[in-house]
Image 1: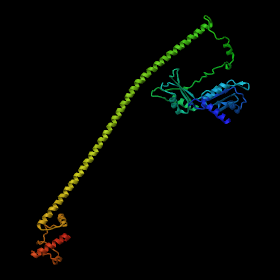
Image 2 (image 1 turned 135 degrees about the vertical axis):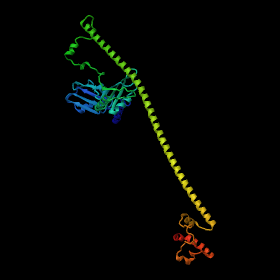
Image 3 (image 1 turned 135 degrees about the horizontal axis):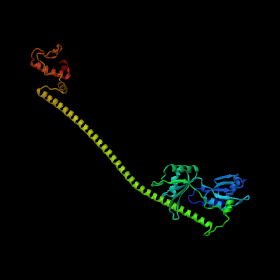
Image 4 (image 1 turned 45 degrees about the vertical axis):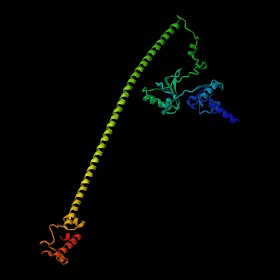
Length: 401
């Protein structure tokens, strides 16, 4: 049965947390004063045992105070309400919420800044325990907020960065103002039992609360104090009015400058696009010129090939004509004969067989070659024709000539 009761107790404590509430934050930290000097850690912990498991316990026995951090704000409020003014060894305990040492005040917030946006903006400086935008009785933003960090270094970093730089949360170029949060105790206040009973206390308490009677000393000076308060109020109102008018003027100038800035941005964007378009056109023109040059080069190469082909055909035509002429004249030459004739190596026109100037080696006379000095007989002509064709086909005549 005990484990069941323990689980039920944990469930009850967990139900005291608000949805989405972070646990063990500095808002759950309590200050306990007027502790006995001989109190032990175990005794101090048992004092808060019914309020869940704490995450921080600190005791200064010499000065008689301590701190404890509970799981949720609701548990801390219950512990404060139940333990405050409870006697311990003849001394009433004083239980208060500890001052948050890492809390910042934020001003100049846009009406469109929410709790979530405020937390997101300050999360870059450290872990944020709580971020809240202060609203009026109608739920409208007052332009002020509170940011509570988990550690003092994170709060110091945010404070320094925001004061040294210009931190913007929205599109509006109005920077926020960050200051250390001035914390007040508006819940417990100053009870009579905690008032300092010194000489000034007794002097001020000689007279009870009352309305001053006209014509008396206190009435005259009370009127002068009221006049001074009224003058201060009027001057504050005038200062606030001047500040409000200056803000409205600055907002108007900012709107006009913003429109001019937008127009300049659009103009620069158009110029950039025109420049990009011009560059693309130049690249396109260069590409077209390159293609045109390549096309002209290809046409020139094709023309050269056509000319060479035509020249080759002319040469072949000349060879064909010479071959036909050779057939018509009775000199039947094969392709190799035509090549020899084309090259001019044979010199047949200048070195005809049977001419008076033709000389043959002696070794050829026995092979049917006619004598160089006289005319040829008919049977010699037949032998000459056959022998010449044989010599021309074998390339021997070229060597001979």
